[in-house]
Image (cartoon, rainbow, N blue to C red; front, side, top):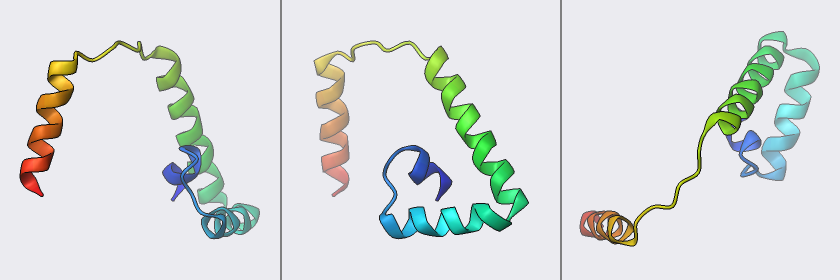
Length: 67
């Protein structure tokens, strides 16, 4: 759930649940801060590169073949 929240994909219910949990659960507080710090570090070090259209098309075709 922490990942969903950090990625901005959590529901209001999940946000509220974490908020309540962070008020009382020390391990949850530590895990939240650790995950947040890791995400920030990775975002700062990752280099964004464009993906070739041919590669995108190949990946999409393979995903579609599994459905």
